[in-house]
Every structure is written in C-alpha cells, then in structure tokens.
Image (cartoon, rainbow, N blue to C red; front, top):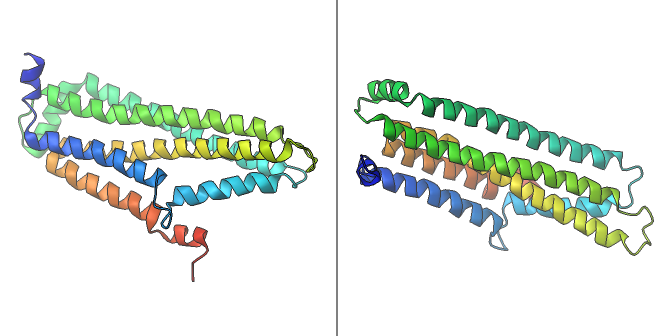
Length: 232
C-alpha cells in the first residue's frame, strides 16, 4: 500500500480536525506571547514580576531565598521532563502494539479502521510529547543559566555591572519560563490529541475545550486579576 493510499484511510473530517488541533496550538501560543498591550496574558504579567524580582535581589542579603526559588523552578521543569519521557515511552509502546490497540479501539467505538490509522494518531500524540520534553529540558538549563548570572550580580549596588547583570538574569529567567510554558501547552494538546482515538468530532470538541481552558487561565482567570492588582 502506497503512502497516498494510506492517507486516504483518513477522512476529510480527520484532516480538518488535525489541522484545527495544530493550528489552534500555534495560534494560542502566539497570542499568549504577543498579547495586546491593554490586555496582557498571565505569562506576560509574570514576566514583569520576574524582571522586578531580579532588581529586588540586588539589595537582598543573603540571597539564599532567591537561590531557593530558582532551585524549585528547576525541580519543576525536571519533574515535567521526566513525566514527558515516561509518557513518550508509553506512546511508543502503544505504537509497537498497534494491532492490539486497533482491535480494542475498534470494538469500543464500533469502527473497522486498520492499525495504520491508530499508529498515525499515536505518533501525532508522541510528537507533542517530544516537543514538550525538549521545551522542559531547555527550560531547566536556562534556569541553571539564570542561577549562574544571578550569582555574578555584584553585591555593591554602586558597581557598574550590578544593574546590567540583574537585567540579564531577569531576561534569561523570562526566557526559561517561556520555554516551560510552551512545554505545558504541548502537554495539554497531547492530551487533547488522545481524543482523536474516539474520532475527529471528539478531537474537535477536545481542541475547543483545551483552547477555552488555556484562554481562560491566561486572559480571564482570577489569578490574572490578582496579579494585575485589580482584584476587589
């Protein structure tokens, strides 16, 4: 069977559902990182707090508190990276047993799709997880860079390198958080992709639900209101 023949096993609705999944994943990520100036996302608001943190660190003695926060951030990225690896392993195991997965899934949702169809669906899910793993690993490393730059910030506030180094530490911290958030969104959409096993309509519904959840957390949550200082 050629690749064109294999692709014909997927209906136009499947292709549409997959396109919406990938499209909305890219779109929501871009909107979160490039929000309107009058309506910033929670991630953008937190970026401001991270930069302010580095400025406050300059006069804090000792800086054990700051080092502890960075260590906790690195632990979080390491945890999610490890979790992603386990999930990737599980996905690859399912791909390796596509015949059994196909038989079970076909029985549950009353279809007769061949094993290749389920393999492709699991591969897409695995790709989201791989992307998440790479983002978490890079975030972990960037938080390590941030810790080193923080350690290089002079204790003397009159030192010419003090403010520039603190600003550098803040920007690296923001970049690390951005990578971490991208990893989280990949995990969200990997879970969404699992709905494709139940069909394209289920994938569309799951995509809409995931998009709504992410949008609310970034643009309409109570935590965002509190961070803006407008909570009543």
